[in-house]
Length: 332
Picture (cartoon, rainbow, N blue to C red):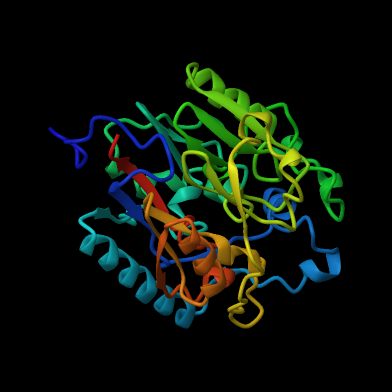
């Protein structure tokens, strides 16, 4: 039987070539899991014990889910209008966290589709609801145990959540530039995870971004726009010298102060810098949260058009347009 991606030659190897096939997430069933040591250290290391008591767990409010799904549908329809094949999760397995951010759970490059060994236990099998999108999927073995976490990270951004005894990382710790990857070492990705990727992709060089940002994914810190051009968060990447050596000669757009769109109630799961979280349809077109006009002007100066679309709950749910997608196929 031919898979849904029967015409694909290989998976996307960069973040910017013309998009052909993408997974767009869903907010249906989204919840905050009970706070075990994995959630405590990876998601909430910046919270005091007192603050932690006020974290709301369980299902998100239905208003959040409904409005987020409306915005995802608007986004999916826009992509279809650009000639893109859009796939969606099939929620055949119980949702322990959410299917909102497929970017976090599967990494693709060339012939590799890897369900990453996610450090949050409630997400370890999260790939199952998008597994239908792949011919074959390399799956993680063995959930992490308490001994794989460093509780000393709580309140200390210089101490990371994950020990190095087991590869653990979210796919959203990685961005692709063909034969080079940038990998953020943070609370959601350890160096052992980078080594695992290097073993799986021997012809690709892995470049570590370290001592920049602990909480937690790379795509609100650095975005690749095309070969030799990136967008950087100036509050984290304070100079090009902080970048891995293989990327220091790239041109940089320094992201202007984002327009904060706020969050729902007490559900704050991302900083205002999630508003630089964009998704490339091609080298010349990106999708950006609709209020980020200052950033849109900076991108326009480099010949990049912007589609300004709503994502009302990207701070609430912790995911912008890059997060809620997984680009499977781009033109080579």
